[in-house]
Amino acid sequence: MRDVPKAQILKRIEFENPWWDRPHEVPSNYTQWKPRPYLELFYPLIESQNIRRAILLMGPRRVGKTVLIHHTISRLLQTIPPKQIVYFSIDHPLYNSLGLEQLLEFFGEVSGTDYKTTPTYVFYDEIQYLKDWEIHLKTLMDAFPAVKPITSGSAAVALRLKSVESGAGRFTEFLLPPLTFHEYLTLLDSSKKPMPKLKRPKLSKGPNFSHAQDIEHLNKVFVDYLNYGGYPEVVFSADIQKDPGRFVKADIVDKVLLRDLPSLYGIQDIQELNSLFTTLAFNTANEVSLEDLTQNSGVAKNTIKRYIEYLEAAFLLRVLHRVDQSGRRFRRANFFKVYLTNPSIYCALFAPVKSHDESMGSLIETAIFSQWFHADISRFHYSRWPGGEVDMVFRGPESTIQWAMEVMWSDRFSEDSHELKSSLRFCRSNDLRDMLVTSKQQKTSKVIDGVNFEFVPASEYCYTVGYNLVMGKKAFQPEQTSL
Image 1: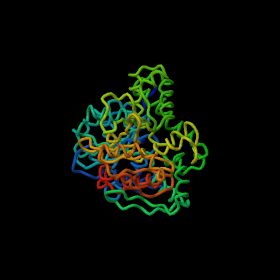
Image 2 (image 1 turned 180 degrees about the horizontal axis):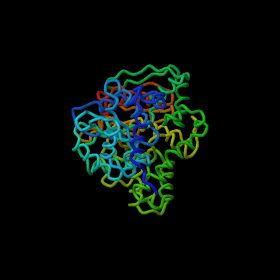
Image 3 (image 1 turned 90 degrees about the vertical axis):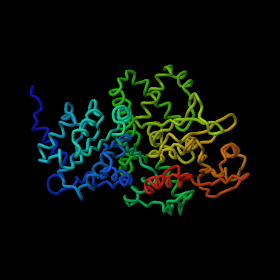
Image 4 (image 1 turned 60 degrees about the vertical axis):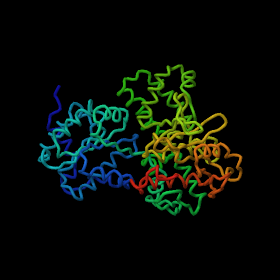
């Protein structure tokens, strides 16, 4: 049996970097996709030479990390010589036994680039498939100051935990979320479909929301977004939209549960992990407890906690911790909320939803939480105490409550003040003069006992958050707004 010759590896590297030859362009199978707005946040990290750090591009499967990389390369090619940019798809079998430095040596040999002295942008896609990648990356950065490494990965467990252990201060993490509602509308608009017209918000402090000319039309598209709007391929494929569950479950959820996590962490009982995830997915936006999960599954608490950490770090779900009526964290986190990172996962696992379905409330809350994916999630909480609760709470510096909101898919709360008694009590306990409440169509404000309640359609709210977090860039951070 023959080993794979080096010449074959060199051919593969040339194949993955077609812009070295004329035309010096990224292939059309990448450029045919409209760039996600997140490119405007990602690219400055790539071109910056002020801080010597590797970039870790992370996010769920199928959200467009590889496409974002190639859009980045396409923009670099406008100012950087083609052979100072190299791309490796680390999950390719030819690279299995090779280290990052050895791949770099092969690049120098096949391209003729002196990467030891010439500024070079090196992209390692799906880097988690290389054993001890973080050690290789740190060594490479120390040995070759002219090299700017950019990596990507879906199995965020390996990426995040190992970057903390071995690369503190050396790596910059960038999270690419599933499509926000703003991006979803932007992509649909580019496909020549009739889209709702929205007056976009100004990027300023305080409540300043988009306004839809036709809220019924916007809500109809918003329900479509809940069902299959999280992933670019679903947006553009009528065939996938006929059966989004097959794509999302088979190509996103199952590959993480059945392949990525077991291979990375030696999980033996895959059925046990799959069953827990299904239970948590069904309860998205609801409070759960370790005690109930243990009793219902028969799985030990420590095992469940470990599984949840894996699922969270792999970007399938997020955990939200509880605070009391005064905004204080509990010493023991016996109760918490779980959120899928995108509502379309729920629809893929169970069934597509309609506007009047009972599950809409939970999916609206899931959608709203998912718009904040790129923000500092550790500051988000929910509040529950005997006799009251608030859906979402944002804690600022020194644990002060900066804003809170109730998530509804109904217009009745703007008419019945009694429905808001828990919210009013929370505002008084935390000296909040304003609270936001989402609605289905109603857009108004109402002062109740000195607290101003701002009612905004959930679809407009989601659009505004997605738009502001990207278009506002660093000038528009969560702590600067009451969104």
